[in-house]
Each structure stands twice: as C-alpha cells, then as structure tokens.
Amino acid sequence: MYLLRSLGAFWCFIAAFKMALRFSSRLLHVHRHFVSCNTAHLLSVPGEKSVLPVFINYCVRFKASGSEGPTLQERQRQHMARGLPRQRPIPGVKQVIVVASGKGGVGKSTTAVNLALGLAANDLEKSVGLLDADVYGPSIPKLMNLRGNPELTDKNLMRPLVNFGIPCMSMGFLVEDTAPVVWRGLMVMSAIEKLLRQVDWGTLDYLVVDMPPGTGDVQLSVTQNIPIAGAVVVSTPQDLALLDARRGAEMFRKVNVPVLGLIQNMSVFQCPKCQHQSHIFGADGARELAESLGVEVLADIPLHINIRETSDSGRPVVVSSPESPEARAYRRAAEEVVRRLASLPG
Image (tube, rainbow, N blue to C red; front, side):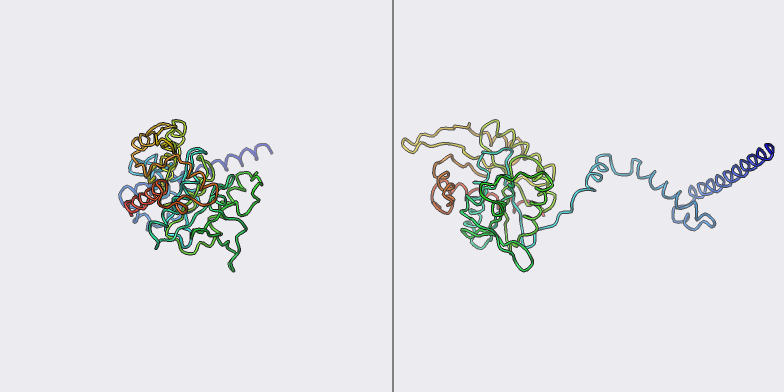
C-alpha cells in the first residue's frame, strides 16, 4: 500500500513537471516572437490566446515603470488626485473669489463684505453675491444687517437673503444667533456642501466667499469642490499675522488656486484731532510679504473708527460713506481684483 502511494505521488510530480516545461516553451516562443515583431503582431499568434494577454500586460507595466514613463512626482500627483472630488461649478455663478486669512482678528469678514459691495459699486451691470463659509463664526448676518431663515424654491433650494443689492447666504441664517456650532468634521463638510450646492444664486458675475481663518478642512473642501477664479489674502502688517498669511497663500498655491494679491488691513491709524499717522501694527509688512511671494498688494485699508462703527451697525462703509477715504480704499481693492482676474491666463 505504501509503495502504491509513493508511485502515485511520483507520477503526479512527473505530470506537473511536464506541464511546467510545456508552459515555459510556449512563453519562450511568445518572447522570441515579441522581440522580432511589434505588439500588433502578437495579437495574431495562433494558439497563444491564454498566454498573450498576461504577457502583453506585463510588458506594458514594465515599460511604464521605465525612464520613458511618468516621473515619480507625476505618479505621486496622479495617485493623490484619485480620491479628490471632482470640481463642479456653481450653477449661474461665473467667477468665485475667496477672501481668506491665516488667522482670525485681521478684519477678513469686514474686508469680504466691503469688497463685494465695492465690486457692485464699481460696475452697476455686474451682479455680486456673498457666501459666508465660516461655519463656526458666521459674521455676514451682522455685517449685512440680515436676519431670518431663507425660503425654499420649488426645487428645494435655499433663496439667499438680500441687502444693499447683494444676495447673501450664511450658516448664521440657519442657527440661532447665540447658539454655538459644536460640530465634528463630517457635519461641517455636510454644511459646506449644502451652502455650495443647495442655494439658488440666480445669475452672478462674482461670488465672494468669506472663508474661515486658517488652512483646515473647510478651505480644502471649498477649493476641491468648486473652481475658484482667485484668492485674496487679508493680513495686518504685524509679523505674527504675516506668518499665518504666508501659510494661507502657500495653501492656495498647493491646490492650484491663483493668489490675486494681499490686502493690508489696519495699515495706519490717523488721529482724528491732530491728523498724526501711527503704524500701530508695523509698516509695510504685507508689502514685503507680497514681494517675497511674487504677488501684489491690492490695497492698504486704514485703521479707522468709521469702519468699525459702520460694520457694527450693519451698514458697511462702502454704502454708508461711499466718498470717504476708507470706502475708496475698498473700491480700489475691488478694481485691482477685477484687473488681476482679467490678466489670468484662460
């Protein structure tokens, strides 16, 4: 019995060895034919249908990994791009302009509001909208003097609230004024998706987006979901603010968003009595940063009580004091933004 089992194992080994030899012979034949013919001829080799697809696929992968294929950096970029959402424009919106800052407290929201109003005031034929993407600390309802909940259209889209001719949408319209937004990342991403996709903006030439401070999930979600025409970075001349402003500008470059320029806010304080000018936060810090980044300073916005008072009362300076030096500074910034957008390629 033991002898029979041994003989059976031996014959199985012999059969497997013969099969391996036949397969090696066929593979060698294909290899020789590949050397003498091109890939198109390989498809017509008779009797090799079971081997050719595997062999051709191997050859294609081998060639792609060689020096003639994409570089390591290109392959890494392609790999990283696989999981990113596909950018889709917002229906009816021609160009999206984001206003950002590396840190809070530099007047970003006030700048975004007056920039939107400046765009509309400089060209009455242009329609401008304002989106508050700062989920945790929405400021647009206060700055634009808007309250209430948005109505829904027949398509279940939210209608923006309008003041000073600017349609606005903010998370502040959907929660109570004093209610903290204590949400985790997934809930914030869902809210941003609704603000981007479930609002009936009508037809807009420009949509100004007030971004939250920093370089976190919201910034990445916005830049990866919609095509952005350009970014405006707001900073004070203070060194600490400039460090974060540089991070914000570099983030936009990482995600291929053009940086239109910097707005230097609170650049100078002028005493209302003696007219003496003081650079409380430093002088020309944003200009030095802009030069190192290869961008422009779009405007210098002074530190003026008129800006603070009009913002707190819900009547931004561009509409409440249109001829004041402060309002003219915001309108110059709007002019520079339009000029930079027109100079961008394609």
